[in-house]
Image (cartoon, rainbow, N blue to C red; front, side, top):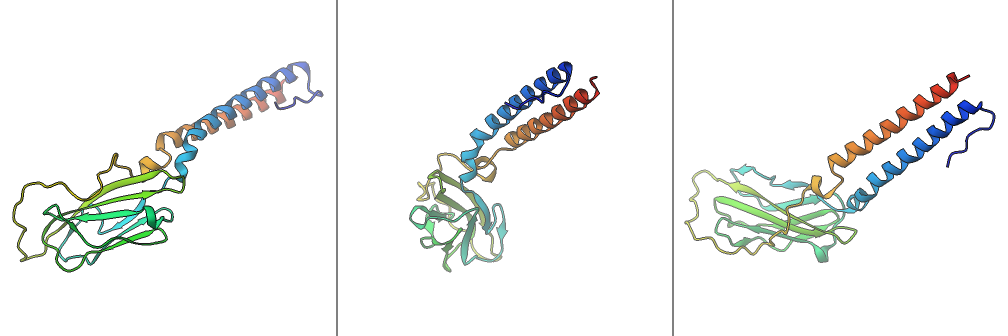
Length: 197
């Protein structure tokens, strides 16, 4: 606990003692807010994707490139691309650092494509998710309608994004508010103790 200077008057020492206890309580509260979020900082998350989610392309892409926030372990990295006929297209992903690349080839047809990924973070936590893009080459025929078939892409247990795998905005806001309250309390009691005769 913060020591209270003995040179202060009795009233000043009481105010300073209360301020010290308040500071200790505020710091403890801030630590409680930060501690649950700390493990999430190690979780990996998708930084960018090419083609990007929700885009419509007028030319067939040669590859899908996913870039994550931290390096990937090739042994625990899965990226699959599923075409409009619910069949997997492209090769196995090539992993280099934080980037995973899937070569698609030249046989893509118009329609919606789903990119699904599953990677393992540095803390061993799996992060997975998916997104879609559309290929609409002018003059190309659309694929024949088929009944839905089970996809070969990994089905995520939960869609995870950069926001949900990292520290949430609510947690950050709570930490900022706690620190602001702490700073305000320190300034208030310091001014009060200086004014006390």
